[in-house]
Length: 136
Image (cartoon, rainbow, N blue to C red; front, side):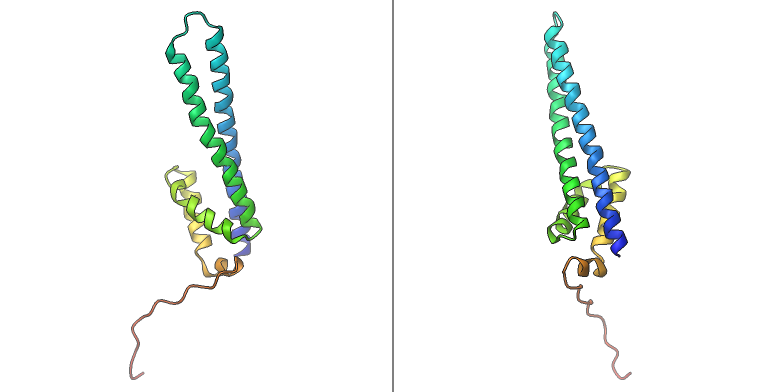
């Protein structure tokens, strides 16, 4: 299970790096659009709205990417908060088909396992009570 937790940490970091790159590229496009609008004669409000929209979309992507990188590092260092943060981030990540969904499923599979719980200092789950066989 140690290998899976380490791999999950690296996958979160890579996913975060893609988020940061995407967010920063949208912010650069927003800045370029704003400069182009300032220099163009007769540019309307739609060009300014496009620049604002690019900035509004790029900022959460960049910040979310940084968050995923931090969570990936915390997973590799076996921090309990990293485990909890990865489980929380896996839920909304499931919407981002196909890679976010795969990462979310893998996150749940790895971190909800009893072996992984032990690695993060958590006790294993208690077995579910089942029917008892009397007279056996």
